[in-house]
Amino acid sequence: MVTGPPLRYYWVAFYNDGTKLSQFDPITFEEYAFSDIDTTKLIKFALYPFTSQQAKNVSAKGNLAISVPILPIIELNLSNGRKLIYYRDVFVSQEEYHFCRACNKEFYFGSDSETTQSKYPSPICPYCKSHDIYKCKKCGKIFRIFEDAKFGMCSCGGHLDRIRLTSGQYIREKRWIEYYVGYKTLVNG
Image (cartoon, rainbow, N blue to C red; front, side):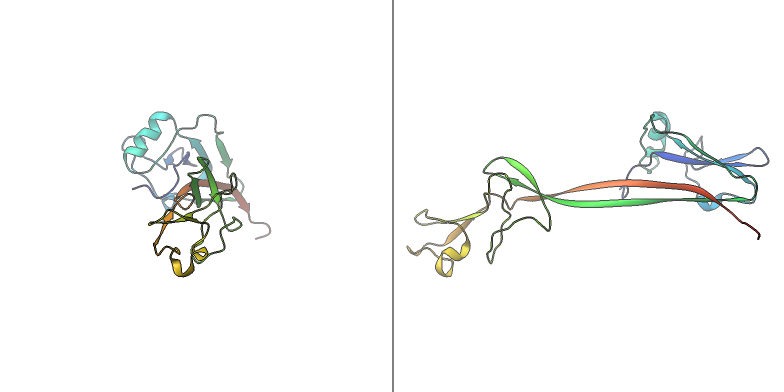
């Protein structure tokens, strides 16, 4: 199961003896750890966007990768005592959405969204102002909120049924990666 956003780049470390180490083996597509880079021989570090075939092969090994051909190639020369700085942050954001059955529109529900003032709050649709209502099972009378019916019962003695107009919810998840690459130079050290 993939737990992070898809990779868009892979790194390649170039050494002063003419060899290089790629994040993914070009034949087996097994992943090398970043700690496998020999920083004592490192003269160049690069990030390359995956080709569609590379992305397919890497994904088949369990690392979700996608090809975005318009991404730039990032190369960093590390001569004159420069030390590589590279990391990536992975972000996951979950947002709650609701669907209004009265106007057939979905809406985002956050901390500043309106709800009914009730023991059993219901989101208020920002488009049509609908929310969950309560209906007597016996006579069909409609109540705006649960507290409008004394003791949760209709005056006819019937119990209330909650009609879910806006409380049906689902989560949308967004995932993304930010890449950071640079170098540091030791001055007067």
